[in-house]
Length: 180
Image (cartoon, rainbow, N blue to C red; front, side, top):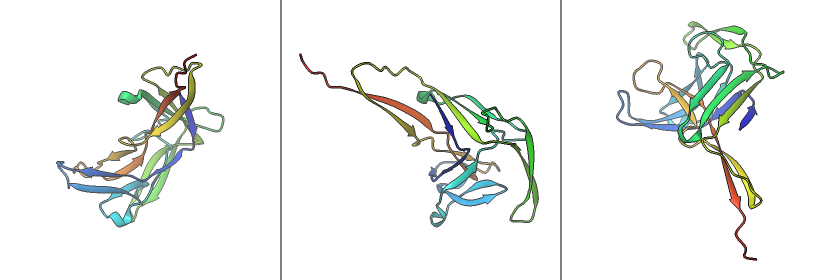
């Protein structure tokens, strides 16, 4: 199963932390950013959708257009690729320079020319479609995997929240048996 989507994604989610090395409590996504990263907040009044423009899968430096073969348990194997307008993987590095709210200079790497993201999911089991199949439903599973949380400073508190990855779930409905 595959999907072609816009690389700009947003999600609104919260996470409850308990028993960590950091501060226990509820953390919310917000529209606030720091150095182009969507910040998490403990202030419920700031609870809002976090926006992430997927233009690089690298957490360090360079252009990494592949998120490959990630085992998602019962959801199967998930891969994603950043592509340009001709659906060719982007591999050209682009450096972005900026200044944060503390007037500190920073930079980060992106993949230049990202137009779409192609997501590919290898399902853990086959879906059987027969002449008794009445309908097929595709849903995105977002509960329990609607966001990636990053603790960049190692204090046990989530600092940044990113949307995804979401998994596709296929289900079928069979016609009820009717006796002849």
